[in-house]
Length: 228
Image (cartoon, rainbow, N blue to C red; front, side):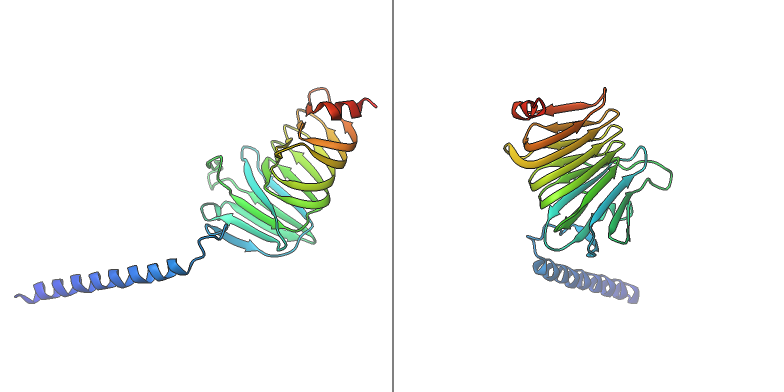
């Protein structure tokens, strides 16, 4: 057998051995991973405490944030979006920005994909600009929401007593909780072409200011409350 042939066979055998070793190594790492971890496919960016949240996306960009009520404050970004999201802190405020690509183009994503996940025990206010915020769960006494541009808020599960909501531009706020939920107080100011859907909310007291082109949906009990 020629020397070149022997060398070729040796290299081939070495390569196969390395492949097998690597496969076993990956298997061991996979077995150690907690498959129940809801943040398995996300990169953790921060664990710093904050009281105020401001999320922004440039015109032509639509960002998405999911918020979970947990004792530990955390900021996660999908591995696919790690280079498209920036964040910073200033005092007690967390700023999150969704970026365009290097050519100024917008990014696309599946409508069910969670791009950024934020966990927090209590957030005093949330301000958005061209960003969709989905409240997967949130429990606290009160909260202030400010929606601008094409920003939106969608509540899935929450236990909050008092709301202060200010919407402008084409922003919106929708409560998609499973059943009508009683709250103590709702103060809402709508302007431009913003929209508020509170059909699943029954406030004990309500103060409402809306413009000529704004949209408003509510249940009959809340409508009677406005007439008092």
